Structures are given as C-alpha cells and as structure tokens.
Length: 297
Image (tube, rainbow, N blue to C red; front, side, top):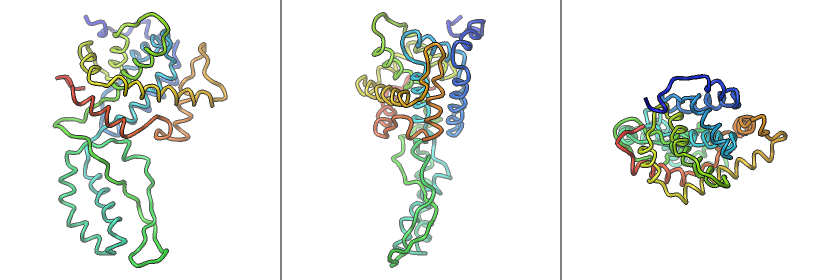
C-alpha cells in the first residue's frame, strides 16, 4: 500500500488540534469558491494538508506564510475557457469604444463582428484574475459633445489568451504553491535536510490525488529557479509586512495565521493582498505547460 493511500487515523485528529483549525477551514472554503468559479472540481485533502503544514512549521516555515502562498497561488493561477458570456463582454467593449465616434451606428458594426468574435473566443484560455474585480461603469463621451458624457456599463478589456489545448483547463496552482514553499523552506532553514516527500504530500493534499515523486521532479525541472525564488521572496516580504501591521501578531504557541491574511483579503481583495504580477504569472504558466508530464492534473 502506498504511504499516502492510508486511512484516516488518530494522528489526523491530533494534527487538527495542533493547527489553527478555524483558519484552515476558512482558507479551504475560500479556495473551493475560487475553484468553483472556474469549474475546477478537484477536492483538497484537508487532513493531509494540515499534517504537511505542521511538518513544514517544524522546519521553520510559519503556518501563516505557508497558507498565504497557497491562497495566493490558488487565486492567481486559475485558468478557464472563454465562453458565450465573455464574447458578450468583448462585443460590448468594442461597442463602447466605437460609440464616441459612430454614435448609434456603433451597434451595427459590433453586430457585424459578433460571429467572428464568438468563434475566436470559443476555445481560448483566460486568467480568471484578469476578468475579475474590474470597475463596472464608465463615462462615455458622445460624438461632437464637449465635456458632456453619460454613464454606461464598463466591459472588461481583452487580455492575451492562454494558449489552448483540447481537454479541461490546466490546474497549476497546487504545483506552483508547492515549489514556492520549497524555496521558502530551503532559504529559511539553518541546518539539516528535509525529505522531498514532504512537498509531494503537500501537493497531493492540494490536488486531491496521489502525486508520485517522479511526477513532482518532472514538474520541478521545467521552472527557472531564480525566477521562482524571486516570486517566493515577494510572498515572504508581503507577508512580513502584513504581520508587522497586525496589532496582535500570531504567537508560535497559538497559531492564528488566518486572522492576518483573512483581514487583509476581506478589506482589500486578492489583487492588493497577493504579489500578483501578470508578466510573472504568465511566465510560470508557460513553464508549467512546456514540460507537462503524460498524466495531467
């Protein structure tokens, strides 16, 4: 029997008691909601995840920082396939740009483009984060008007699509989170070593399926260590900043990492909580896709 294909035992309850259970459950609920929005039905193994977070904490990686990385990656690296609703958004955006020039005739031009736009978007991949949290309305100036405008719905501007293949959209977040956490553990420990199984089990918990070491190593080789390391440090720096602002930082004896991340996320939203940068995200997505093993997540 595989070391990860074992039934739940008493140690699971012990791990749940030692970790911030309320915070972990909140984080899992948030991740499930983000996944639901893009049609990702993969379930997280919460017990396995809790166990690996505790093992990482024993090696010097704060639960707060570990949870922050997982949440950030789950929000950033969500991919979905464009659908009919996206085509309507694009068409409305085109119409909005033409309206100040063509007036009511902008509608006829947009209708003429509709079939082509729907066909182009039918199989495109998009980053969900790039289509969320945008302003909803804009002031449009009418033709020949001076300083006169009217408020209309704002449609999201088109972003470069992610190259598409047949099949469901990839799910890179668990893998990239695991590799970032590996960098943080490596740079944070003073001595000793840790088993790669720790990271493999962490990713298994996030993927909701068993990950083998060879699959993990195949993924790992596709990423640039320097670029991934810089991204990991951005997570660490942002997290340290939020902790410094907290009136009651979490204590080692009473873990409460979720309070810091949760407060920031609820007040400012993910775009201003995680170190999101479109160019970096696109590069990491490309690296993930280049050397994808035969078995896709």
